Amino acid sequence: MPRTLAEIASSHDTDKPQSNYIERYVRLFEPLRDQPIRMLELGVFRGGSLAMWSEYFPQGTIVGLDLSPNPLAQMPARTHFVQGSQDDVALLDRIGDQFAPEGFDIIIDDAAHIGTVARTSFLNLFPHHLKPGGIYVLEDWGTGYWPSWPGGAMFRNRRAEISALAQQTVGPDGYPAVDPNFTCHNFGMVGLVKELVDEVGWSDICCVRGNPDEEKRPSMIEEMSIHPGQVILRKSSR
Ligand SMILES: C[S@@+](CC[C@H](N)C(=O)[O-])C[C@H]1O[C@@H](n2cnc3c(N)ncnc32)[C@H](O)[C@@H]1O
Image (cartoon, rainbow, N blue to C red; front, top):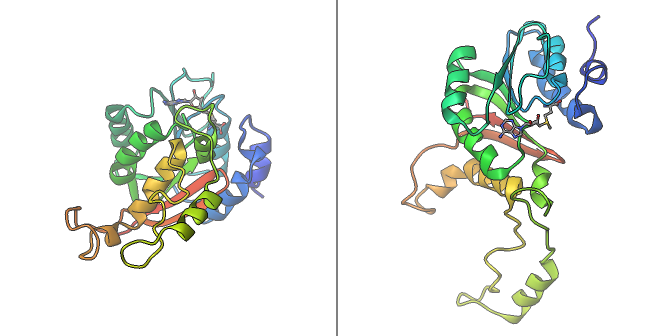
């Protein structure tokens, strides 16, 4: 009987069991478990997650990228390590061409957790190196709410302020004139997640009632679910 992902995770040096990530990964990945999947994980740290994925996907090819040198003296079966930065798009292209010329099935970004850096990886990997229908996960997007994190900022709850404004002012069409920013917090990884919401809505952005200057194309994203700490995206199959 193969070990469950929770059992495997608890025996490797990875921080994923400290969150609910493992439960969600089980729901997402169980149907793929015995497939010859190709997975890329950005951010390797001590290498525990590479060992975990190698055992969980017995037919899988697992590639890890990290700024730091390879932490593993001995590579687990079917795993590969590449040193470099997640925003080096030429390197990402080389990784895609070498390890997944047909595209990765799964990409997990657990590296810098900085919005602009994660966006560069996403804009290269999602369209060019993820299979149609493939899964892309952004971990730890809540860093965008941390003022101490690069790109992050303190959340200010402006609901009361904005409600008061809406009661005072009436716009030209009789609607309350509301602050155009609503209560939005657009910093760091949170800003990236909100850009991805725009991508989900792309067919409405470029339709005749939207913005005619924007490129006419379907959304790249078929499905996006947002969870504490994790955003899960499925690439459109079209
Ligand atoms: C949270 S740890 C990864 C944990 C690992 N995935 C696990 O589950 O055990 C983040 C890693 O990202 C790496 N990192 C930070 N910035 C990076 C960048 N720009 N490109 C690639 N790796 C980066 C760090 O060196 C660190 O090892």
